[in-house]
Image 1 (tube, rainbow, N blue to C red):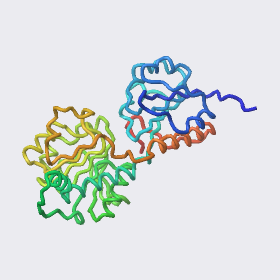
Image 2: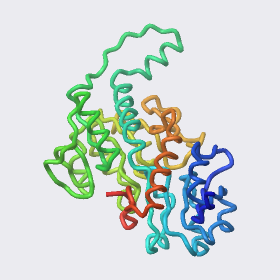
Image 3: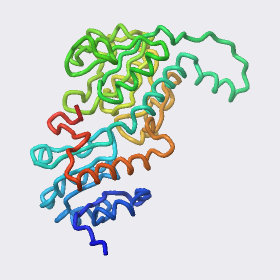
Image 4: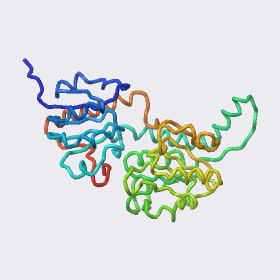
Length: 324
């Protein structure tokens, strides 16, 4: 007779989310309680593992004092900025993320965004809607340049795919260096304004931290090429949105593809909606068919490792806010 598991796992979810597809297998290893944000405070006492299935929830901050047995938090996302706060950073709780799940899909999305702008596909759809046969020339993508701001796993996947498509790629990260296997040269994000003018495409995929919040502001935008294309697939707060709107209105830069924005959903009153040189998508760049099942499978693998006493994979450096 198999004994009941004693390990207590709380899964933070929302009413509109289906449970993990492998919940039965997870329940073989732990006593699982599925809760929403308003039920979290009651569930935290005695919980050893907290799984953020609702990875944008910030509800732990208000109830962290009730987490008397918490040892491990797993966030089913690449970014962990939504859950981070000083009490958690200073605690002994281990935080892991879903690093690796989104690398390929986001890289494809970035390449698709660049191709769509260079080949004027948005214009073609608009002309088709109006039944207009409008000949135009397009931009050559091969040989153009891209600066990928963020040199983690997703940034590296972006760099490899863009280079395979014929772009010249440079990275931007915490420290400058040369000889990087994926980027070649990496510039320091602190020096972004000095270098950004050399690139046709600027791709934002850095984690959101105190150092990167508002990284792309008026100074950086004014230093970019007037033909430049800004692609943001990281977090909306990496870019000062009012500065971006002004840069687009004035022609300081040519275009923006925004999968993330400061306030999500983007308010109907935002001028970004009506700008023809802006492509907006609802924070979906990594969400390919089957992505949630992959997230659940990755968590189950790590849960098995936890039970076996293995070392953590994808452990977040809480002082920095990302895996390194």
